[in-house]
Amino acid sequence: MSNVKITYAGPKSEKISTQADIVFCVDSTGSMEPCIEGVKNGIATLVEGLKTSAEVDFRLRLIAYRDRHDARCGTPWDIYPFTSSADLFRSQVECIKADGGGDAPESTLDALFIALRSEWRTSGTHKTIVLLTDADTHPTLHPSTYKLPDNGVHRIIQEFQTLRHAMLFMVAPRYPTYLQIERSIKDADRQVIANYQPVATTIEEAERLKGLKNVAWEPLMNMIGKTVSVTSVAVAHANG
Image (cartoon, rainbow, N blue to C red; front, side):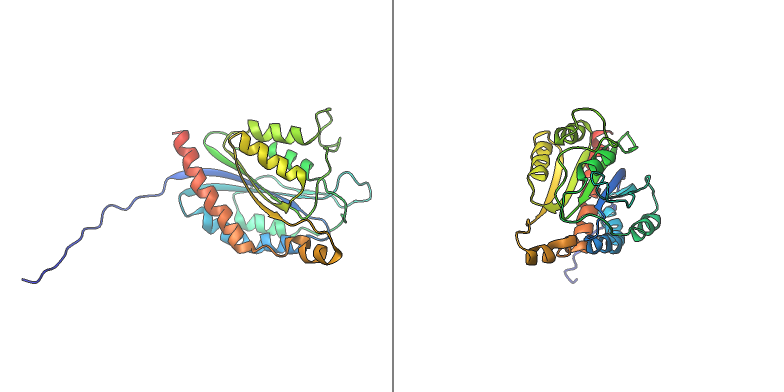
């Protein structure tokens, strides 16, 4: 009799069902066309990444922001509610017109504040904010966003620290405010992943770095999806 090794396949483990809400805060000033294209082309990869560890019931939201602090920036923001349709989200990104801005800071804190005040699903939902910008931020919120005196970066930090099951992805230049946000979120035992870009010091560097055009968008979008998928499982177990 030949020496035959017989193996038996065990039962297939089924992925658990989880929930995740993801808000993209995309700087949509004139230099950011490469970033907008990267997000648009990477949406399918994002969704594929969401399938890796769980059956994620996901929703996506787009906040395409510019500079509220500069009256000359007349292009309105594109702010959408959550959608569970990746196709609709892609069409929203396609409609962004990169316009306005310049070398000055943008209203990034305002975009983060609006994202943090999103209509999140509550029970067992993993909450993610993705910030994409090639510029610094104004140090305070614009009065049209938030009228109270505590309108600086600490307002944003406190909002993050009190939001349960929250995670922040940042692709941004290494400016002090973004570093402060990262440190504070870590101190509050929240998740944060930062892909810092160099701060341009010459015209040549500014041209090379503008619009985050050196970012490999498909791997980044896939990484975001996979990370959300894995973390959503931990959130589901914590609420099980």
